[in-house]
Image (cartoon, rainbow, N blue to C red):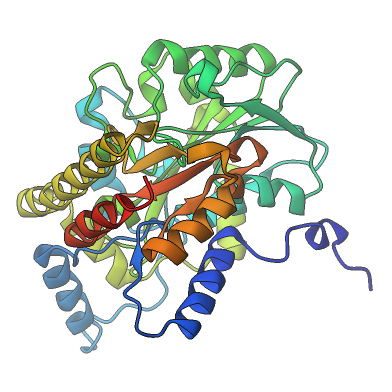
Length: 387
């Protein structure tokens, strides 16, 4: 028996595990401290009532022989896939078929599972800094990584790969920097993929936060994208499903990968919970849309509060508009973990060290708008003491 040595090369602790460990260590020494968490991207508002009602009805159905359901379709129920097309894509002039929509238990799973479609010899282009899952997934498979630097000097807009990349991971609105691409900027990546016969894995988890008209909500708004792009979306941030688990992935037939992904799912995935899918369906009702957007409006206001509050304290910040994250330069040249420790020890405030998203995240931290509004206000007040 031989183990996967690539897996051994990963860091001992996942970024957010390390944050949790340091926070817990501090609280063991200071049990009386009220620690304010502005780091992890977990939602804090309850699920909208229309979703709760739909899930209750689904549970009740499972209690009766006439309406009981066992295994569902691996690709998801047709009624949810059609609702996704009718609400998320048709209004933007994008034509899809239900066979191209695959329901999942969240974006994170499919971001990793899509790796099964590609040979390990493929090179992978990843933004730096970036969400750690893209990097870890590629390293687990032993693939060569091409880094696309996102620097302050280029406003965190990456250049095209200097060498051929077979797979490109793109996330916009971006995690962690909170920045976006215009349609023209994203079209350059689509054109690159078309020219090099590459595939783009487009993480669109934060699409609902987009406000600017020149920022595309879907990569399929761009010419040729259906030939070269797989799009992943999540209900975690859209509708508060972090504990419910549901999302979806679009694999257009034009990519030549749709049937392969279907076959993979039939073997390795038994389908998303019926209860979760009924909750997701409720998002698309008139009441669901209104309730979801009420929560999103709350988070948008919180993002602006964090961004403006940090600017008032003298910090350089990016994001906070079109995205729920605020990217902040650490003061006085401090490294990311030193500032994290200082903020925790002096203010009892938790952020996310930028270096956890890659070496080019060193010297930055990320703040999340998925936080209690009063706690954000208190955190900014406490931070006045170290500004």
